[in-house]
Image 1 (cartoon, chains in turn red, yellow):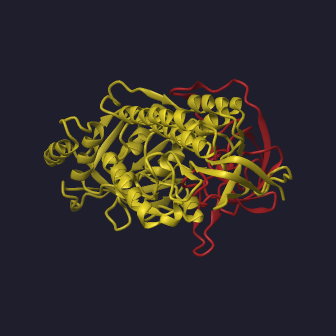
Image 2 (cartoon, rainbow over the protein chains, first blue to last red):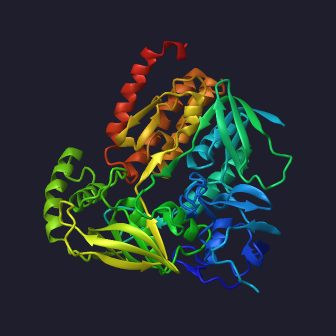
Image 3 (cartoon, one colour):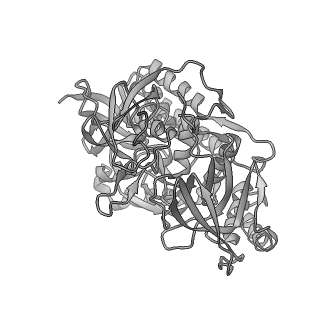
Length: 110
Length: 425
């Protein structure tokens, strides 16, 4: 899996395990992979996707902010269910994520 | 709809909650712990960073919270506690009832309880980062220091290749240090703009003073004297400190510069930086623009008290502890019989103190539920108190005037006993 923002050697934890299981996920029309157990927000971030929704009032783009499920800024639609907090939701096999346009996922993997 | 029964419901599977769950389970109590995060440990798994302190940049001591989280989790499990992750508590009602729902509503599961009936509840919800509102703070790619730690330490994902850090306080500095060690180009750690919503230092003098006090509390015999010395020191330091910063731990610390605006500039963001005079005045024509992938902001932490509010627990605003905290006794009980608190919900402190507070709360709870006899209860409470004090003496003082805050709260507790006699039969 080639994601530009993956850290190969952690300053304390060292190299990541050589074999890490992956799951297949769908980001809009893009079929891609993520590491098992990681949060959806982290998986998207590693692929350069940080804009996750539009503010309902101002339509300005929003993404992860607090990272612990408190601020509700990272809400996405998963398997047709709205308001899933990407920062505390682990990726799972076959997960379908729907993101609004202009997030960097368009035209990927085609 | 299934409602489960337990002796104690613990909310939050961080160091305080896990330690308390282990103690009560070991004494034979039925304990259920819930946490909305997918894995146990609270903030511990994200806490792999150099310990803040005087030698942080010379000889850093790295803490490994992930390891500690595993130890605490395994011990609690072994003692017999039931630990449910991915479950959000949405209300705590006297009686006691804890309403819960799946943190991930897209997950179709039928085996998840919707609530818990318990004889006692321990709130160990911890703390959350204070927001740092400034122009552009809602842009995607602007995250808190805590979120950056989780990305790097838990998921091994870099927030970006080029990052600016806004906010000068201990959490911002240890995150900047971690990012530099992970190979990220940290352009600088700068002050936030001056506005009505931000309560971290916004002037060079105040930032330098707070940093000096934080790394050497009581260094000059007493806290008040340390503050006075650092006040004089910071006036001088703000005059001689280089505007372009000094490099510590691989990143430039720039208390004489402040971010003003964050703007989108594809593929990343642009941060407008100005230079400041020691008193915080913006120097004319000093604006500069930094092109970055991500911005990490930090304004410190505040206790997470919403569930105490839903329970009707009286709160008090104690600045020295980080903001609103539930009124509670030194033994971690609140004015509501059967409701206890432990960890950073009682005031911002490190994980070692939280763990010790969890054990102290557990002993008090065990006494209330009849798992400990009077004689051994008093002895055990005494030694648990000493453990909290010992942990506190070792810990980094996130809130420099913490001890004063704790004293204020003890007074409030004594007052509450008289004001709400009906709450204390």
